[in-house]
Image 1 (tube, rainbow, N blue to C red):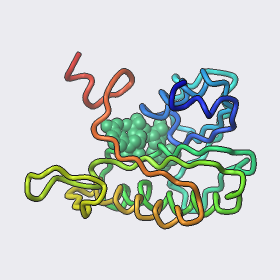
Image 2 (image 1 turned 90 degrees about the vertical axis):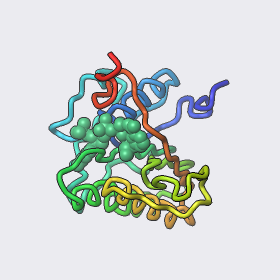
Image 3 (image 1 turned 60 degrees about the horizontal axis):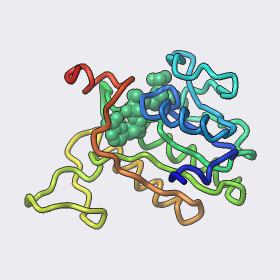
Image 4 (image 1 turned 30 degrees about the horizontal axis):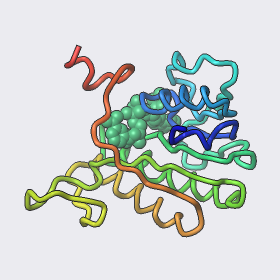
Length: 188
Ligand SMILES: NC(=O)c1ccc[n+]([C@@H]2O[C@H](COP(=O)([O-])OP(=O)(O)OC[C@H]3O[C@@H](n4cnc5c(N)ncnc54)[C@H](OP(=O)(O)O)[C@@H]3O)[C@@H](O)[C@H]2O)c1
């Protein structure tokens, strides 16, 4: 049994499904026969989402009043959409922070049928260790980049909603691999 096996056959929403992490997650969910709803936008590269079993919903999360369709049927949400590169602090905060409030506020209406929400934060939200000692989830957050600060803000929103919603926040370190275009080119 792997960690995802309890998702077998469940109805799942993946934001950022066209991205590196989201598209690999969708592959795993397909192998578990999940009903998969993906939030993508018109400009998204859909090459990793070719399966007819995937339901695509075209929504630009930069629109402040976006509405997620079909939330009433969703059992699990994976919030993978995010900006890892942006031109301004505002762009980072719009997507990595504000979107979280809009999404989780809509989830509240269906809190009885949503069994789990995974919020992708980042180690950048924690920032570097101030004294060189190991940090953990109890260490006060000390992000130093706009990206990290926006991910910290998104985490704080997730934690606020976790009082009413079954949200788990995870903070991956650098993730790289096939389909990823920042680190992999250096390794090839
Ligand atoms: N990769 C890492 O090393 C790493 C480490 C720690 C945490 N994370 C977090 O993991 C999540 C996914 O990262 P990733 O590496 O998979 O990044 P990615 O490949 O750049 O994917 C980001 C996803 O977010 C979507 N997105 C961005 N802006 C959007 C908008 N306005 N409307 C709709 N969708 C939008 C993108 O859609 P388009 O395809 O349309 O651009 C894409 O699907 C992010 O939250 C990131 O902060 C990543």
